[in-house]
Length: 170
Ligand SMILES: [Zn+2]
Image (cartoon, rainbow, N blue to C red; front, side, top):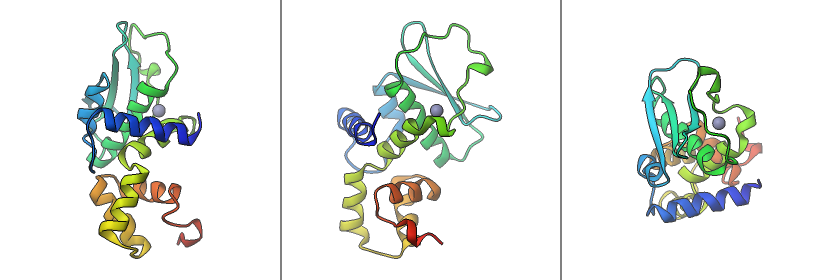
């Protein structure tokens, strides 16, 4: 799936769930899209998605992670829920059935998460109306604060949207 198609799906989801300004209420959005989060103390994974026999989505989210990181993982798992081709539902959840998030294999879900939590038009409006064209570090810090994401996630997204340049990387 192409990046533009993923970003369009993210915008459709936000519109459908009545989200108009940052920060996105990810729990509300996921609930509206039929995905339930299970916050629990798991090691070695940040999240995992499965679909039950009735077709409802469930996502395990590691309670060990920083809350901002959890938000991104929740958005990533919503990406599995909405983007993945229908897989046979699992009957028994085994640890081996967990999909470790943020591996390079899950590029589409990562891109979806960034597009959902930091939609291109919202980021553009924020920079133009509120922030102006500040220094690179300030841009990252303020977008992270406003959109409730980690600075690392804000930096990746700002680079995707060409608000910061590869060449300005330290
Ligand atoms: Zn994943």
